[in-house]
Image: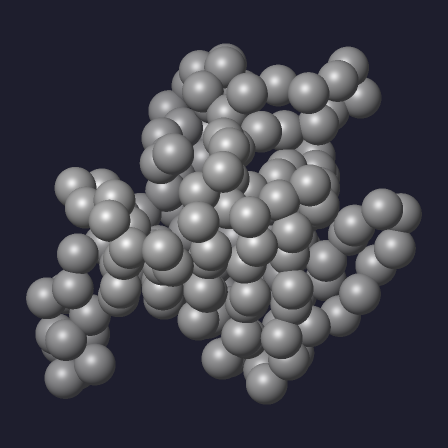
Length: 145
């Protein structure tokens, strides 16, 4: 185990898994809104994306989010537009933005999220679906709200 891995292991974190228990994203809670403490006006997370989003647009529960890509790159699909984000780029995401990302290798980001103003949701072709309902239909998936 490297010093970096040891240090990360000391920080509260969760791994979100997709259907079949495949790791999707590991989130380290650096500042603010962790699973027990909801007092901070902003939240700072370290993310490691292990795999791509499904090709179904989703939103976020925060008024705004700013993602600094630290390592790797991904394609983001939002409103019919595909953009490339590489290490050093910043991605601004608003509450009402529905998007998904595709990546080839793991991607590390520093993710600053504003105040929570809603819930996660997905927008498949059939219309909006709340996070919990969507995940409940996926055997072996687990996530966080």
